[in-house]
Length: 78
Image 1: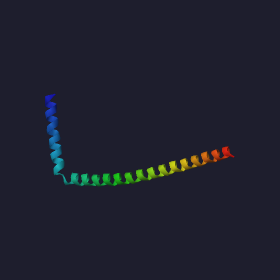
Image 2: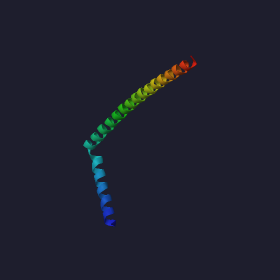
Image 3: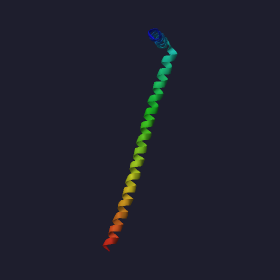
Image 4: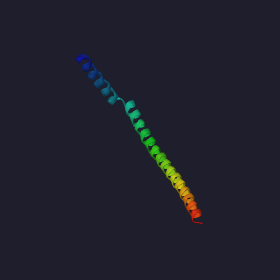
């Protein structure tokens, strides 16, 4: 068990050092970072559009329900 732990740490250290030395890994990491930033921005824009659409629908639904209620109340008064 102790030996597994030491071997795993040595392997992780070796792999990490090799990745840090690799220009290809750095390019891949930079491209991945750019894509994540781009997708995060697009996702935020889409989420905002959805919020605006849902808010407009709720406002429209409320307006229609309020108008119907007023119409019913006016008919009661007549």
